[in-house]
Length: 398
Ligand SMILES: Cc1cc2nc3c(=O)[nH]c(=O)nc-3n(C[C@H](O)[C@H](O)[C@H](O)COP(=O)(O)O)c2cc1C
Ligand SMILES: [Fe+2]
Ligand SMILES: [Fe+2]
Image (cartoon, rainbow, N blue to C red; front, top):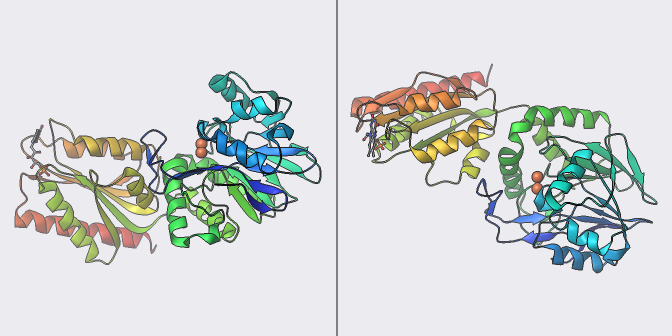
């Protein structure tokens, strides 16, 4: 993808990774691919904000060269050291060895660990700024959004917030602005991104958002390091971040299960029928057939979390076990749950699940049945689903 003008003097020079499907190892299934955004500001001092993943340095360097020779770069700002943004840093630095580098002290330490170099480094933190000509760039450190080294860079001249991972979406496209793609797909990807990358840091994010909103920054663009630049929907995405980071959720239920011979699946389907009879929003996920990334995105604002597994060798089944450990990492609050499952003789799965999810949700009594559920037991499942849906609805009207 060639370099594109974002606004006078500011260019998007990053790379599109159309075919990346497993980001962060196998923790994030990126069905729409990924972009690594990097921004070039042409002012008295030529300034590069973040780089790209290793393997994409050629694209980055070509894009920069199409505007100004890489050797002319005076300043590199490192908002975040994770390899998807810093991988090309050593290569770029070789071509502009005199550049001055700015980032948090943690970022410097991280770059030294990853690459054994940090260049002509200056550590910065909130309240500090850098004049590059017409523009003065302000730094806002944002530790744990989502690594300790993260920071934002704000350009009052352009009214652009360079937010790095925050406000990102994994969305490979030939477009650069939010209003150039389908809005619903964009928000789905933003929600998926939040659920899978930022959710555990809710408290920090909501604190930072409040602090930033008190600064009354005028923001025409939010330029993240992944996906589309927000220009039309800046207030929408801000509102969403306030909503998600405050653990807000709605009358929505996720039923997630794993089964061997379908007994637990039959229970799950009846539970869902009971929920639907109360007209509550519900989705049923066989955890072996869905990407955990998508299930987590749905669960982000679902108040009801219901989990099922049959018992296998005194344990829950292995795929749901992995999923629940992943979900526990969300450190979610304000959720309600119950657990169900079929078993043969000892039935430990339900307790095993409860032990994991009790830290992220309030548990109602569980339901276990031996082998294939009878029609009476299926009626019980329906009733449990129905009653749980009523609880969820009441919770959201009080
Ligand atoms: C390999 C294997 C291991 C099992 N281990 C246990 C066990 O340790 N304790 C138990 O109560 N049932 C155990 N069962 C029985 C299942 O939990 C029981 O068949 C259940 O009805 C399966 O439900 P499902 O069709 O939803 O998978 C095991 C079944 C299999 C196939
Ligand atoms: Fe990151
Ligand atoms: Fe990233």
